[in-house]
Length: 132
Image 1 (cartoon, rainbow, N blue to C red):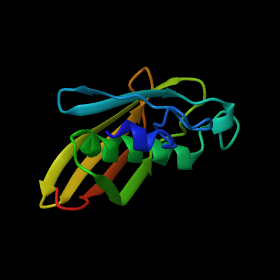
Image 2 (image 1 turned 180 degrees about the horizontal axis):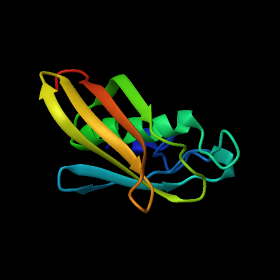
Image 3 (image 1 turned 120 degrees about the vertical axis):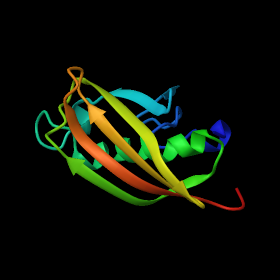
Image 4 (image 1 turned 90 degrees about the vertical axis):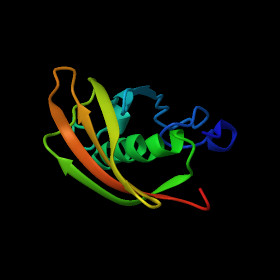
């Protein structure tokens, strides 16, 4: 990832003062991040805003392809909210590639609580830009 050009990314940019500042690692064929939502991330009291839940899923999936050296953008995103995502608990966000056809990658992702309970799942189609 070109860190110089992405310092202000809302999800992962280290210089964005209101950003999520996500950090990532690869475990086998899975891309992983963790996040603890604070009160500034809530919708209803004690529950993370659904738009931010979808942001976490979008970032873990599209950024996985980007981390592999490809310039990638989300073409389609589906989110299934299984239960409210709570504020103040460490969330494990994971994403993985399920298929690839030409310049399109299909990925899946999920957000889980420390006990393994899945609060949200996602599917994305990610398009590779340019001649890559």
